Amino acid sequence: MTEQPDWLDNFVRIYNQLDRDTLHLLAEIYHPDIQFSDPLHGIDGLTNLSTYFSDMYSNVISCQFDIHHNLSQGDQAALYWTMRYRHSRLGKGQEICVEGHSYLKVQDGKVIMHRDYFDAGSLLYEHIPLMGLGIRWLKARVSGEQSGGVANKGAQACPKF
Image 1 (cartoon, rainbow, N blue to C red):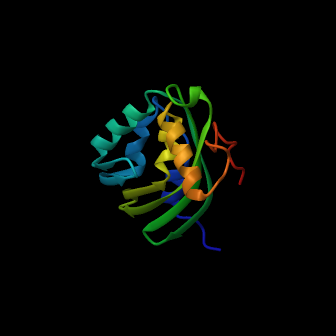
Image 2 (cartoon, one colour):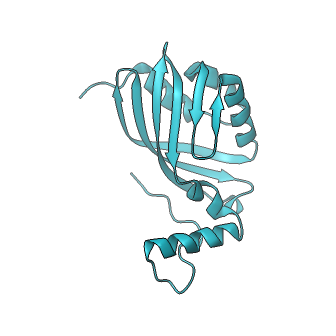
């Protein structure tokens, strides 16, 4: 089995240290010309990414990434993860779990392209009153669940990998 590259080890280690007081560490893992995107945002440049993270972490109580699988080849990697977070304005501050994966591309030892893939409903929309109720109902209808109206009431336990 091939050993994971140092840049990827460093990326995972720092990501799990991030909070509102450690955002200066972003410069250790991201290239100044980073292109970051996820289902909700597209951000260019380290300065803009730092501002985004600062805004995002302002109401985060805790955030941890459980990396359960990764693939790397040359200057690219894919991480498969479960994010466990608590947010003061979502889900009554209870732990929310979101499964996703990230595609990373590195240049000069730092990540220059980061693309996250996850269900935005699981991350955010399902935890907003009324909107969450509607989204859970719609997901149940699309998936064919029959639960007498609204499926998936409340947060589910985080999966263990």
